[in-house]
Amino acid sequence: MTSPLALNTLVWLKQPGYPWWPGMVLDPSAVEVEVPAGYDTCVLCLPSIASSVAFANSSNNEEIILFNPETDKELLEAGKQDTNCAAAVEEAVRVYEQQQEQKQLLMLEQDAVKAMNKASENEEGKEANEHKKHSQVKEEKSDKKRHKKRERDEKHSSAKKHHHHRKRHGEKHSKKERNSNYNYDDDDDNSENEYSNSDEDSLDSYGGGDERDKKSGKKARKRIDFDTDEQYEREARLEPHHQEEDAAYFEQRLRENRQRASDGALERFREQLASLAAACTHGSVISVSETAEEQLLDALSPMTTIDVTFDQLRRTKIGVVVGKFLSRDYPVRVVMLASAILTYWFRQLPPTTQQQLRAQTTLELASNDTTVGSEREGLSLGAVGVQLEATFTDEEVNETATEPTTIARQIESELAAVDDEDVSMAVLAVLRDGHNAALRRGLLDGSVSAKEVVANAVDPRRLLLRLQGQSGGSSTPEPESPLADGSALENFTTLYACPSCGAREAVANEYSVQAHDNMAVFVRCLKCGETWNVEA
Image (cartoon, rainbow, N blue to C red):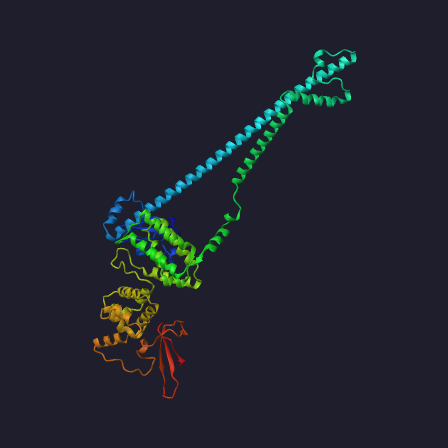
């Protein structure tokens, strides 16, 4: 089923035992979860830092409704009565205001585009009217010229007939005719030329031939200029086809302008961003002024033109600092710029690294099984914490009242302080070992702290001996076989791959039957229990 609600739509969600809770419609594929049968909407319960996901049926108004602070006064007041829900309400109101601002900006842009289109249409109509008016003027002038030419033709034709009549009867010309510009004495064969000359003389009498030529030249130039303007305007309305407007070419130029960043430059960026983030943080509240927003944008902008490797991301922690600005407490422009930087860096990583990071993200999302407002809020686990919690058996958990999630969260916090991947793998190997039930029970009953486990992860024998002494037991006897002893924790190794499951978390022990035999290395997988031997 597909939800009719658009993504990022703010809604009220009703769950048993809780007031109406604000949330945001989420794409389930983005968090790699499946919507259960009977539901069509995936909702991220606010505040977003809780990372709690719930499901609802959009057609059930008793389960989910749209969020509108202008009309939901009662729901807002009821939500503020709950401490946890109050934080969610504040974030929802803030997101609602940001969305309304974006809608207003979009409407203003649309109005501006409409105004530009209307102005363009008016300009085109004005040009068409001018062109039409120009054509009418040209046509009127042509009509006047034809009329004058017709009058001249009729006048000359009448004068010519009168001349031939006098010539046939031997009559003399009058004084007026003799003083006229028309030549009646040429031969009849040259009458055409005579008429042409008289026509030119007649035209000259109206203002001179030179002035007529000048006026004709000016009119021609005006007509050429008018046509040129029309051509320029037509070309301006066409879509550009030069290479600067080509998307692929533009992307290529951007990639060419990118450069590899040094560790020193990344350290400077990290320190600058960390100081700006600290200046915007006041206790548990993030407040960003307009000046601080511009400073953040100026600090983030240079990172849009640099490339970083995965090793640089791990060493300098620049990605962690940039990721802090993804919080909704920061302005929209800062969040969008930080998101674009991290997205580009992620896509430049090798495919295998991307898959590992996606798998880690899936584990972190799966670990957020707490419900907002419940007693377990704040105990959501990371990728390592989920695996730590899974090491405790049901029998061990039932013997004590301590939740394994609490222990896993404590160990995860200690590992985060150490920040060593090898130590994390060693702790996981120690707790996964089936022979260390006493150590896991000690964590649950409080006789062993998470800090002690992390500090003795490589060699936990001291903790095991202490637990055995507290229980009144004796020390572990010398094993007769490396396959059935408790020495698995002494020789933890990742050198050998399990032939059964492929895991590298194993325990290796050397063993020989007789003194003169070669030492054989017996390896036991801590994940599936497979045992095999390797020649030393």
